[in-house]
Amino acid sequence: MVLHPRDPDTAWFVPEIKDEKRIPRDGRLVVTRTRDGAKSFVTLTNGLPQAHAYDVVYRHALAVDGTGNRIAFGSTTGGLWVSEDQGDNWVCVTHTLPPIYAVRFAWPGRMCRLSRDGRTAAHLDRFPAQFVFSPMASTTGFQRSNSSAM
Image 1: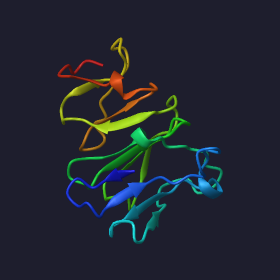
Image 2: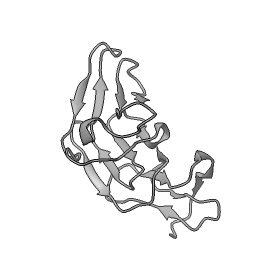
Image 3: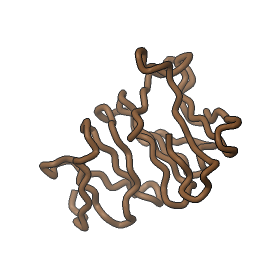
Image 4: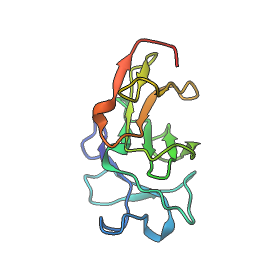
């Protein structure tokens, strides 16, 4: 779950069958959004796989930027999706990464090192806000750098 940075009644979730199974409901990858403090939810599917999707999204792998408009999430099957409109529409950046355990938005214009040894880095110019993802089991591996070399 992530909360909107300025609207405490707005939040996003990526639901799945309870922890014992860890698979998306009905094999569909969806994001749900509430704008009324969890009294009601809207299911957002545009651009997300709706059949044979087994993407599990860990709690640290869903992120919202400081404006509350851009959302990104990564899955245990290596998928990375971004929405520029609060989740109404999604774009798959890639589906070929190792399992993603965490996603965070970064300061624009900075390179983010993703591994402790500094060998893995991402700078995604395709989207206005940069975000980083971590194939590690812990978010402690995130480091920010002003370096522009990959």
